[in-house]
Image 1 (cartoon, rainbow, N blue to C red):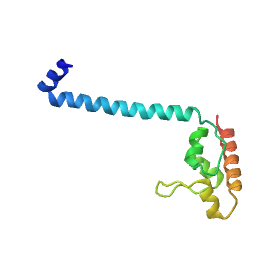
Image 2: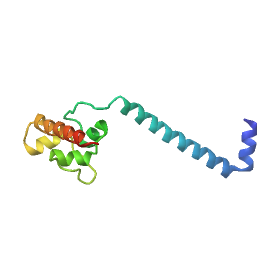
Image 3: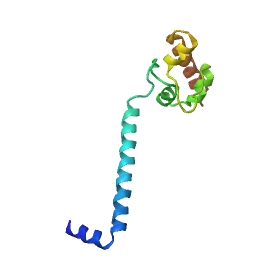
Image 4: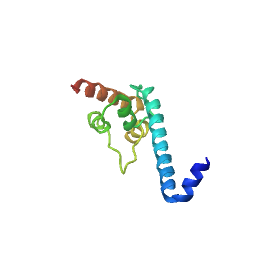
Length: 114
C-alpha cells in the first residue's frame, strides 16, 4: 500500500486516470453481467399486457420494429414505447386482442427466419 501512495505522489494524474478507467470498466462489466443473467432467464417469455414491443422483441430475439409492422402496432414516439395495455386502451379493444396480434406476429417472424 505504501508503494501505491508513493506512486500516487509521483504521478497523481496518471494514477487517478488509471483508477477512473478501472472503475468505469468495472461498472460496465457489472451492467453487462446483470443483463446477461437477467436475459438468460427471460427468453421466449409469454406475452403479457405490461410488456413493450422492445421487451417482447428482446425476449424472443426478434426485431421489435419488425414485430410492430407485422402486428400492425404503432412504433414508439420520441423513444417512448407503449405497453400493450396502453395500445389496447388507445384502440378501445381488449388487451387480449393486442396480445393475440403480437403472438401471431412472433409466429410469422419466426417462420420467416432462415
